[in-house]
Image (tube, rainbow, N blue to C red; front, side):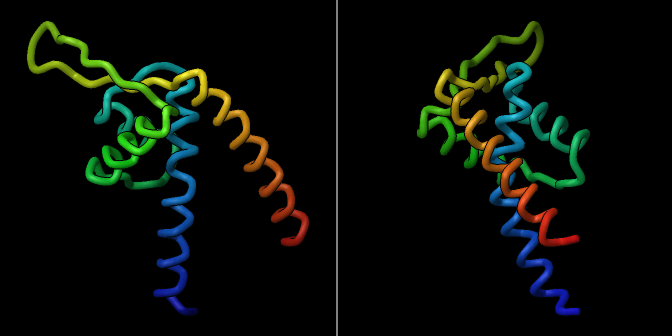
Length: 111
């Protein structure tokens, strides 16, 4: 087995699906960054560093898919919470269709 090839392939798959995973999670409620990382860990086997998450959230924000707001905390520093925009919810619906079609196609040829 070519371990390096598999690791590189997995890295690309992870990068390609992380946006989708984030949108799925943000569709439920708003989250701040660290909380979002924890939610990803709970629901997947992916290890996501905050250094990976925040640039991706900034790109999603620039693309109008998520929005953010600072919320003051009773104790401690304010937290930046992220939520889907209307365009983000529509984007998620379209991504879900693509994901399901791709999964179905892959399952057909794997059998």
